[in-house]
Image (cartoon, rainbow, N blue to C red; front, side, top):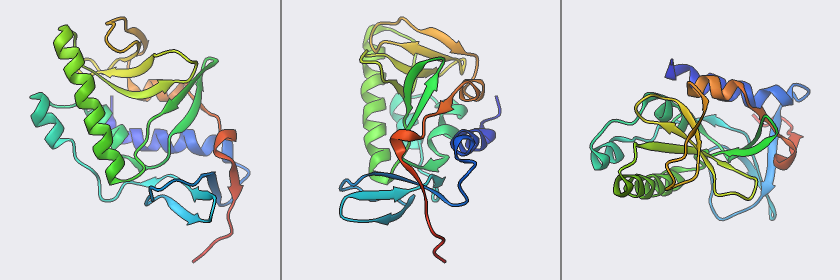
Length: 191
């Protein structure tokens, strides 16, 4: 409903299980891509914590390509943070919220969204835009209906969307971050 609060909803979701940490940092396996949210890298690990996406990426090219605006909630979601994917639970269902690691990752996301759009267009389906994957071995994804803003559980290309929440803000309030896979640690302050 109010896209400008989605960034606050995301940070609240992240902070909730980390209340005992003064300076939490997530520790994940190192890969080749660097991120503005990284605090430190060593030979094997990346130490990071979500931070405001500055400068913000833009959906303008994507909107031009699909000839329609992207729902403001989805733009607010993807343009809030630099972050790794966020493992969450939704009523016992493990999901992963897709986040933007760096500008190249955003370009990869746009490419995937264009592929998703073309598949839907060819099937004559209404436009939904994914923002989470279901981590149960299925092909299911969680998407936002671009017209209504409703959150759907769907199988790509099947047109079988089940409404999970009336809005992205309400959906985020149903989630619990599962910090264990992100190995939260206390980082000493470096000024």
